[in-house]
Length: 448
Image (cartoon, rainbow, N blue to C red; front, side, top):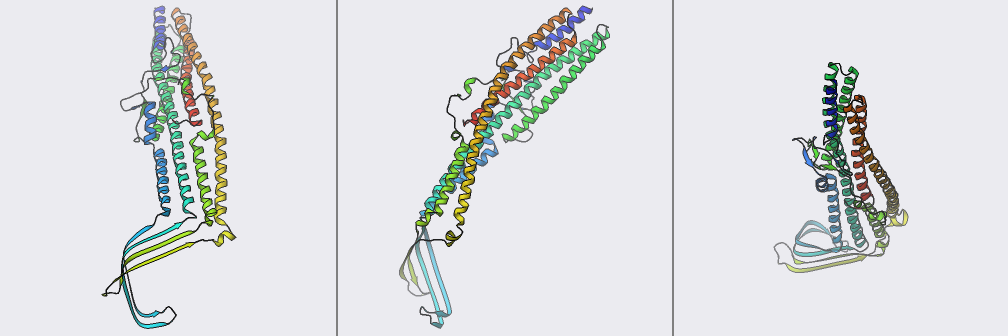
């Protein structure tokens, strides 16, 4: 009877290790696969490809910066109108009764004046000193807005990818722990039977119960983390509140090394869209400064012409053509005293130049950090895979010893904990490795 109960317990532990959701035999060298036990009928399946597509199309932050880019294009279109005249059509009327002042200063009383006019007119106000420069500034701001939109989109996609991998990792952890906790409960019940038969100590049963409770606690923590990352991803994808996302990818596998940018490729901060945005904004401010410095050398042209019928009320009207023109150079006295416009723009230029240099430093930091994370994750991946293989083999041998009666249950529980930690570490390292590759792509200026 004793050997029969030992055999039952050994078989239960063997089932725990042979479950497809817990271990592969042999271990897949580059893939962590679990059964989608976390998926429920109320959950919405999602893949990494779908996340990348939806984040770029539906995220409100991306949409906002795309609208800002469209606004900059509209501002540029408005600036292009600086030289175009205005066409008028309609009529004018005038009535005066009483006193009037003559051109030589004499006043006449008892005057009654009236006239009417109807026709077409054309007027133009062309500022050669500001128009061309402000148009160039508007074009530079349009380019800056486009670069900013691309940069924000890339950063948003990176956050979406990282959140998806976090969700997938916690989901797979929950699936793994769910299967493991179920088998641990089965083993605890079998030990309880053996304790009742006097074949096992009460402490061994209590240890089995504590092990099962620990797995249940870890399961609940993984489920909470999974739901948290699901909520974050729902916000990034602009999905209806309350949507529960579940990864539809069957495996969490490391990205192939070829997916990473070649380390020998030339790298420069100029490859980042943020650099283009800062540079374009700096150019825009420079063009504005030229409008207040070099623009003073150029005149302002005003033209006006109209042609129509002119006459008194109730009297015959006659054709009248009017033409007016002026070409003026203007020198604001404030330019000679306080020089406020140029001082403002010079200060803005200094700030924007500092921002550009700060971004170059940030670029170097982000690339160095991403490279360090990728190098560390690559080493960790090999170590975690080896640790998983070793603990899996150790657990297999412990089960075999348990079948022979040479291993105590607590020894199997200890090995099981090592295997559990190695399995969870392997999942986390794969996630960190993939996130590090995407982070390096974005840091070096590659568009996702």
